[in-house]
Structure formats: structure tokens, C-alpha cells
Image (cartoon, rainbow, N blue to C red; front, side, top):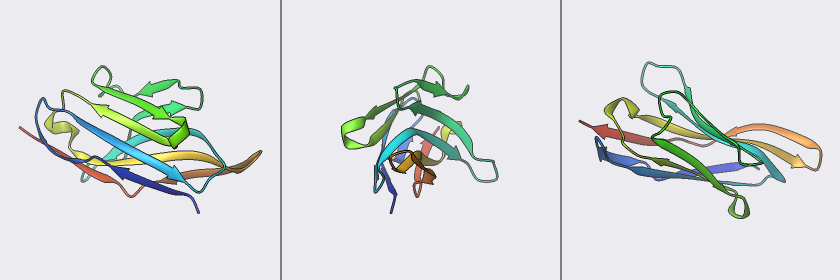
Length: 120
């Protein structure tokens, strides 16, 4: 089955940096991957996505601070987070849109989430 395993969360001071990783397995191919976040009492929001062709899209609140990238050979997506602020504190979730076989879309899968806490 498709699995997404995230890593790299933690506690950092304001102005610091963290790098998240998410590795997917169990699928035939990946169409797109992305990062979302959800803080307590808030809706889940898009952070960044990257397409099969490498086109990146960012949420307004992270533009210029976060960078999404991927390693196709390793089925891994990264999120480099710089200039972190307390308002970036959230659980960060990885999402992958996959194919389960050639020309057979498999839908979206989510990771278990990784906590990022930014102290002021």
C-alpha cells in the first residue's frame, strides 16, 4: 500500500530554519507532492506543492521563506523552511497524488504529520 513517511520536524527559535522530508512508497508513480499544515483550531492550509515537472506553488504566508524541492529517484519531497516565525507553528503534513499503475490514478495520500514548533 502507499505510505508517506515524514521527518525533520522539531523545535526552533524564531528566525531559525528546519528542513522537512517526506518519502513515498508503494505506488507506481507520483503526479505531484506537497506540504500542508494545520494549527490547533484552524483549517488545514496549503504550504507548497510541486508538480511532476518540478513546478512549485507556494501559499502566500510562506513565499520567499520556504522552498519545496524533490528527488524523483528517491520519491522524496523536501521543504526547506527559513526565517521561521511563531505563526509557522503547526503540524505539517505531506501529501502525494499518485498512480497505482500505468494510466491508473490512485488519488491522494497523506503522511502522519510532523510537529514544527517555533518559539519567540
